[in-house]
Amino acid sequence: MMNFIGVIEKDKNPFSCESWVEHGLEFTEGRRKFLPALLGKDERTIRLKFSANDGTYIAFLAIRRGYAQWVDGKLEATEKWLKEHR
Image 1: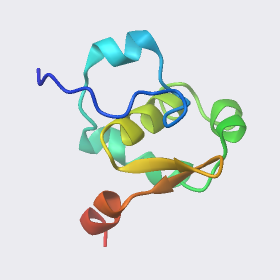
Image 2 (image 1 turned 135 degrees about the vertical axis):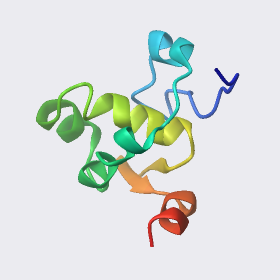
Image 3 (image 1 turned 30 degrees about the vertical axis):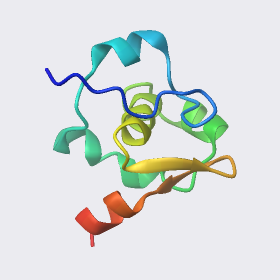
């Protein structure tokens, strides 16, 4: 497993939690397929409308690995995501 920290600070990744940080899992294609449904959503919506596996964990990994960012209280795609999914 790769030793990678990424974006885990709570102010930049509100979905971060210690146990998930320790997992160090990759943002696999299987997980990436859930990200489009989360983009543009606020934290409350992601936590309430999606399961932990399909919502908060995906958002956490996407931010951690640089595919999404937290902007004005919403999950937004980064250039890295957009380049890979044009």
